[in-house]
Length: 125
Image 1 (spheres, one colour):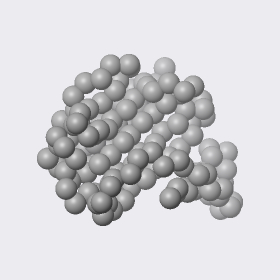
Image 2: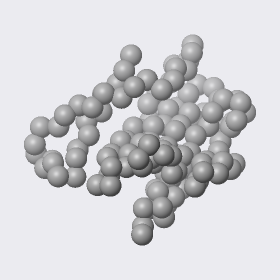
Image 3: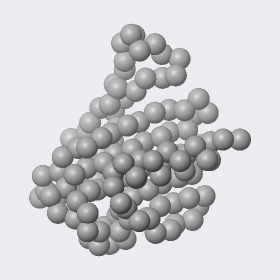
């Protein structure tokens, strides 16, 4: 099943009808009842893509010990500039400037703040 999320373009007024942009299914959590916590996607004026998806899952994704599955990514011209995720078998980690490094997940709020800070630092000239 594919989900659609309304995307407001920077030039589009909020009172105008919004187009639904289909998002591809990136993965399936088999045999789990996951609950969507948040989903955000935006196209930046420089044609970058900022996307954040967080799920509350009934059991931690090994080797993590928290109950969230997430991905947060900022790409530009098809290249990943910033990425945070917790892939099965790898645990919590981030991708910054082409380097993968461990990430210490504390909370959803802290994850969002860290992601925004990393994206902001790399978008500022």
